[in-house]
Figure 1 (cartoon, rainbow, N blue to C red):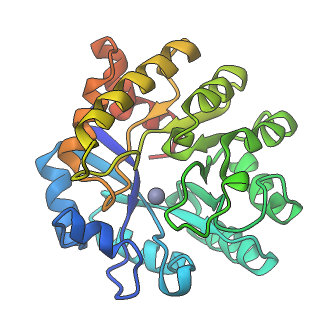
Figure 2 (cartoon, rainbow, N blue to C red):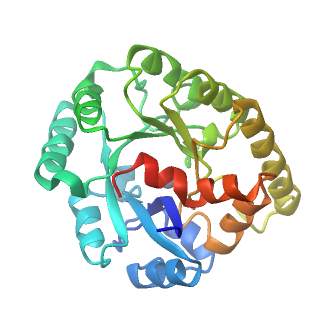
Length: 274
Ligand SMILES: [Zn+2]
């Protein structure tokens, strides 16, 4: 398989989904049917599906994400979102055990709670992820709401966890935006730290085009600093980004064709049990 993998997709088809305004802004219907159509039209073979924030800002239940994946004819695969409570951790690990190879990893939402990635409440997730070789994805960088805690969402807060758990595969979502250089240092320093380039821009604002160009430049420079594109993953954060500009960003990175293909899918195929 050589097609593209989208390592960061959201969908719930529920009315309280807090990403609906992003979908509206992008002219999206934000449905499973639409998503699969766009994936097909853009050569995206596989997608990793993550809970969007739902009613009251709480992530949509993981069972909903698993249901949507089951309706996708094997094209979407669940990543289980874990809130920082003992009950949520036990639920997510229990669901992962039941689904076995169907689960691609876990997602932890830094910045949406005043809890660091090193909090002991997450230990059970990390132990399980390590034992199964599953990655843990971390929301990092800008938070979608003004009430978020940037101090807890900073990518460098992952350094102590990576020091303590060198065998845990970690993904820094959104490349830590706007802290791209800090994320590059994490990838350079830690063998098992990866980053996705999802959800890093929106369109339609005064400086959108300038920013898009700046982002392609900054990401290219960050990859040069790391010294390799082998741990960088394509993602859209659908419905935050649509496929056409998201793919344009990946193709605007000044990389050799072979590395571009790795970013678009090869790296995700190595990292996740797809
Ligand atoms: Zn996301």
